[in-house]
Amino acid sequence: QQQVKQSPQSLIVQKGGISIINCAYENTAFDYFPWYQQFPGKGPALLIAIRPDVSEKKEGRFTISFNKSAKQFSLHIMDSQPGDSATYFCAANSGAGSYQLTFGKGTKLSVIP
Amino acid sequence: GAGVSQSPSNKVTEKGKDVELRCDPISGHTALYWYRQSLGQGLEFLIYFQGNSAPDKSGLPSDRFSAERTGGSVSTLTIQRTQQEDSAVYLCASREPGLAGGSYNEQFFGPGTRLTVL
Image (cartoon, rainbow over all chains, first blue to last red; front, side, top):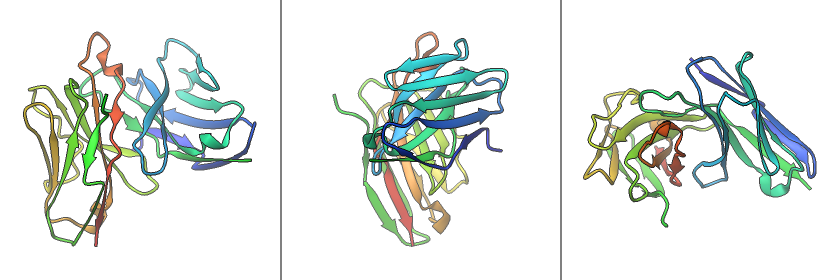
């Protein structure tokens, strides 16, 4: 059972464009939703995260939009740059148990000049 | 300071052999996780250590997988009688001790060990 569904699998965006990656979750106990960025040969690194008490969080060019009723959240990358080319993972966890992250399958983003 | 380190970075082994993968967490991080990343898949939780508490082994896929954490620091993931489906990148992550809402403390990932089983 895949608890966090992520789309698209891959995305090609022109430099300066907006990249949008979507995730949907099933477990209503989830209450923390981070996005991780992973470059080849590296481990994932936290990019931005949101709690469900807000509908949007912005950090620089990166914005998370959160829709609690629809159980969906998305990452928007404004003014996408070639250096943003990486694999992005959405994740979720609940404030219980071991707090392990449940990850989506990832989106490979390529930003072309 | 130093981040999470893992060794070896790459491991090639033959089917049926045992392998050991090592993780050195960030100093002071009492929580340690192992995840597995298979090609085209997200990260799959394997096991969690928190201080001296009993580990959460609920993500281990079979009894061929085991892990230990000595002295609350270094952790070793052992895979016995490796199979080709064990080929993946094994990632370790650590985070600071929890305060209120500490589940939301960032998990810091190491670079992973790429395991190839021939």
